[in-house]
Image (cartoon, rainbow, N blue to C red; front, side, top):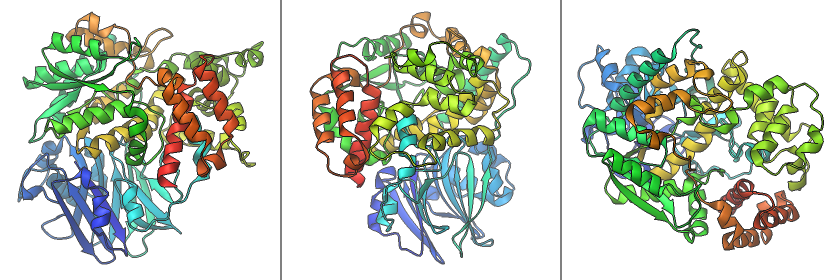
Amino acid sequence: MCGIIGSFNNTIDKKALSCIVHRGPDAQQTYQYKNLTLGHVRLSIVDLSDAGSQPMHSENERFTLIFNGEIYNHQELRSELSFKNFKGHSDTETILYYLQEFGIEGVKKFNGIFALALLDKELNKLYLVRDPFGVKPLYFYEKEGKVISFASEIKPLFALGTVKEFNHDYLSTYLKLRYVPAPNTLFKNIFKVDTASILEIDITSQKITQRRFFDNIPKPIKKINKEEALEQYDFLLKKAINRQLMGDVPVSMLLSGGVDSALLAKLITDVSNTNLKTYTGGYRIADDNINELEDAEESAQILGLENEKVIIEESSFIEIFPQLTKNIEEPLGSTSIFPIHFLTQKIHQDGFKVTLTGQGVDEPWGGYLRYNPQKTIESLSGLPVPFLSTLKHKIKKDGLRRAVNAVEQDQRAARFNESYSLFDEAMLKRLLREKPPERGFKNRTIEIIQYKLKFYQLEDRNAVEAMMILDARMNLSDDLLLYTDKVSMQHSIETRVPFLDLELMHFAESLPSSLKVGLFKNKWLHKKLAEKHLPKKIIYRKKRGFYAPTKSWFEGQIGHDLEEQMLSDVGLFSQLFNKEEIKKYFDLHRHKKVNYEKQLYLLSSFYFWTKEFF
C-alpha cells in the first residue's frame, strides 16, 4: 500500500512527496520521462525487498508503473504470463507484466484495491486507473482541457502549484448526499478518477483522449434457491478472505459489536488458524445505541480473540476535528471518522501495517433501512396521497421525512435524491444565503443520480436492487471508503475490505433483492450464513452504530462551542450560510425538539474544511 503522484512540466520535489509520505514511509522515489515526472512512496507489505520498489520499469523499458493497492489474485494472474524472468514476488511486478502482455484492459481481471498510473513510452500514453469500488483514491488537476498533475491525495496537487478555488456548483449536492460523487469535488478543476475507470492521457498534449469503464454490473440470476445461494456465498466469502490474508506482514482487524465483523473474524481464524488481534472503539457514555464495547468484548470471548479496547474521549472531538478534516481533504458527513482515527492510530502504535474491516456489507446485502421502503415508495409515487403535504411539515423523524418527500416524486432519480437528502429543498432554501440559480441545485443532484442509473444500466432493475448497486459505487466509494482510506493511511495502515472482493460482489449483486431485503428484514441471506458460523446471540443482538455520539454531544458544551465558532465566522462559511438558520438547528437540537445531529455534523465538517483550505 503506497501513495502515487505525477506531474507534467513540473518537478516533484520533497515538499510534494512529503504530503503523502504517511502513505509510504518505507521508501520514496521519482522518475522523469520527457515532460512527465512520476513519484512513489512505499509501504512495504508484499515482497519487502528492493525487488518491489517503484516506479517499476519493465525489462524492455517500454512500461513504467506506479501503483497503490493490493492485487489479491496476482499469483493467478502471474501463472497466465509468458514472461517468467521475475526479480521478486510482489503484486506490482505481476501486474506490470500482465499489462504489458494483455494491454490496459487487463485491469478488469485485477481482484483487489488499487489506483495506478501506467506509462507506455511506445504509444506516448499515460493511463490512470481506479479499482471497481473506489477503495483507493486518485485525484487529478485538469485545466483548460489538460491534465496538469495527479496524486493519491489532494494536498500534493496544491504543493505542485494548483490554485485553491471553491466549487460552488456542488455545495447543494454535498448538503443532500453528505459527500460529492466522483468525478467532482468541492475544489474547482480537481477531479476524482471514477470507480472502475481508465483515463488515457496523451503525454505530449496532456489531454484525456479516452475514458473507459471496465466494471460490468452483473445480470440478475433468474433462478436460484436459498440453499444454493447460501452455499455459494459461504464458498466465495471464505475464498475472498483467503485471498486478502496475502502479504509478508501480520494482520489485525477492526471488531465492532455487530454480525459483520464477528463473521469476518470467525472465518479468518477458521481459514488461517491464526491468533487474530482485534480492536474495538467506544465511549464513556451510557447511550445504549452507541457503545459497542460490551458487545464486541462478548464476541471476542466467544470467538477466542485477543481484543483491544480503545476509549474515545468527548474532549477530543473538537480538538481532533480540524486535523481529521485536513487529512480527509473533502468534507464528509460520517461521524465514523472518529473511531477509525483512534483505532488505526492504536493499530499503528502496536506495530501493524494491515487491518481488515467488515465494511462493504450493507450496500450489496441490504443493511440500510432506506432500502426497506423503496418498493412501496415506487408503487405509491405518482398517486394522490391525501394530506401528504400537510403531514410532512409535522414530521420530526429524519428518515420518515425523507421517505414522505420521496413518495411525492414521480421519477426514480428524484425519489432516490429525496431518500438520501439530509437537507431537502425547503431546508436548503432557508439555509443558503445565495438562492439557487435558474438551473437549480436540486436538478444538479438529480442529474448525477440519473446519469449513474443510466450509466450502470439500472433503469430495468427494481428500485431496491438499483439503489444498492448505486450505493456500492457512489455512497461507498465517495464517503465511507474515502475516509477509511485517508484516515487509516495517515497512520500508515492499509485497510482491507474482504466483503468487496470482486468475485464475491459479482455474485452478491446478481442475487434478487428478495434474498436480502423485505419490509421488515435486512441482510437476510447474510445473516443466514452467519447462523452457520456464529451463535444467534451475536447475529440478532441490537444493532449499534459505528459512529460518534454526536446527538448527546451537540446537546451539551460541544454544541455550544461549535455554534459559537460557526456564528462568529467571517470567511467563506459565513458567505454561504444563513446564520440564523444554523442557530435554529442548534436550538431545536439542544432542547430535544428535533434530532438534527446529522445536519449539524454535516455543517460542522464543512465549516472546518473551509477554515483549513480557504
